[in-house]
Image (tube, rainbow, N blue to C red; front, side):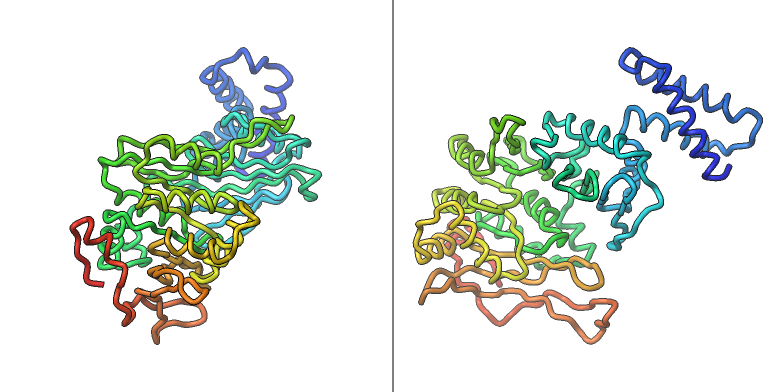
Length: 412
């Protein structure tokens, strides 16, 4: 059966159901059975492969009770990101390449219905009065929605898909992001309660890397995770509390920010705090938490280099405490952070660990850094393909106090 004929059947049956069924009074199973019966009746004696028949039924059902054509896209595990710019333009990222699909929503109204269904699942609101919302799908995929008049091209959705299997350091080794030797070093850093900050650009794999590191935390500890949209998959820890922010409602009340959650978490007897990402004034609260007995905490932030991350942290802290002297801010950052891991997405779309750097302290008006590992390209690199490895520098590790306190040794 040709695609045009398939779409005509889907449109006809869907319209018939909307016009003649009381959808609120029919169960999911009964609806699916009715759809199957109507599809078979519509096709009649026409030959259709079983797989195509199942696809037609699923598309009709998902357009009524699911997320429409989004269901099929979300079921494709090779797709990592979905970008919808109005109901006619749907883009996906597959194997690191962004491409436009031939699929589209029937109308803007249908796209708006899907948005309301997605947002409603997590108890959030999005409307003209509050046109921006961050939420997540039941599988954990991160969703950002922007409505008109803010989005000029129509309702806009960006979905960062959520892997069904937790990211592990073993997978990072398999993907070539780090080596087994570096993985063992990072494990020791986590176990010895070094405060680790993961930096990188958009799509560089910060959350993925943080998730892998989190699973090195000893399972006997009490952990509090704080995120805009819950994505971390920490599976080995029983004493785990996951906190998620909440946007303000239509009247402007009820907002719960990352700053609020960090302050609350300090009263929950955490041994470590894991902050999914810092973007603003909450950086100050995170640094203070790291400086007040919550060693071993982890977080991420957007930056193009390790040095850039420090500058961005300074700016973030100033957002939260505008009157704080720059010297005091830098002192706070240098005493809170122990290790910075910088990630990047390279020209061939591969995600690599570019640098592992030790934060030494504050001296001569500058935060002192000690790079331990640096990514270097080798002779096999080309314009299309990056080849290289994360190599040990000649710098000795200097901050070994926490290692000694934890009874661990490390040759770095």
